[in-house]
Amino acid sequence: MKTAFLKTIIYADIFDYPLTKEEINYWLIPSKSQNSSLIEEKEGFYFLKGRKKIINLRKLRNKYSKKKYEIATTIIETLKLIPTIKLIGITGALSVDNSDKNDDIDLFIITQKNTLWTTRFLATLMLDILRVRRKPYQNEIANKICLNMFVDENHLKIPPKEQDLYTAHEVLQMKPLWEKDNIYQKFLSQNQWVKKYLPNAYKPKDTSDGKDTSEVSEGLLGWWRKQQSLLETLLKKLQLWYMKNRRTTEIINEGIIRFHPQDARIWIMEKYRKKLKDLNLKA
Image (cartoon, rainbow, N blue to C red; front, side, top):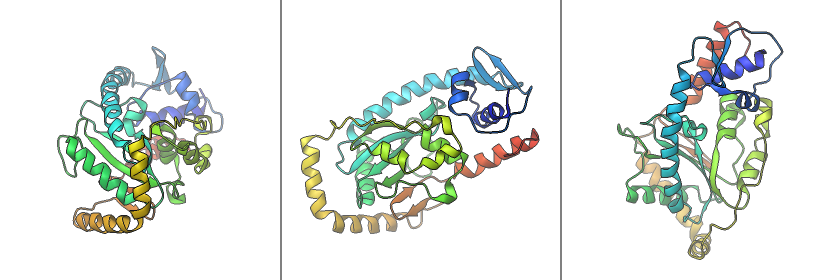
């Protein structure tokens, strides 16, 4: 096996996730060739030596993920009625069918320009009415919906300081379950930097169906366009006031809201670099 294969498997191992040969080629991390005897294979899965137990774990998580997909699909049927939403995608462990039984469901939402806070308000309200939203510091989170990232269509590019292997995975693993106006393609086009880290996984394609905006939604959209500037300002101030004493490591910038109490990017990349160092491999 080559170092590129080994690095790819090392990264997946952080998530207890053995890879098939096709997945290794798809998520291959570029590297110079070098032989390695640290990889084993069983049942078509490749993993680090001594880690065959994660095969059954992957199979079990795959079963849990199927159930969570059904829940997510049902919820999205409601969320897509919000006229300012342009894309709803699944991120995190569920995007690669690797969710534990007690995991929540992470959603990534792209909004129409200048409607970020309006969209978040409506999405949060809908999920609260349905009683399925994951709330801050909630202990029982299984199958709850976590609205962990909102981006408006004018701010699709990931900031340079966050452009690394972890974020490249997050961008390319995200599964759009509903979109319009071919916004997913635009999102990928704005983030071509991911090819540096995962060149084989960058495969732009048109996933927009263009049929899901109902007449009711279009009517609402016309109303929002007339009122959105004032409403957006008001709802932004209202939500920031509410969040004032509740914020942890969340990121709130122009055109982007990312609500997550812990930044997984930091500890995952630290763990990846440590694994490489332990095996005398360069990052």
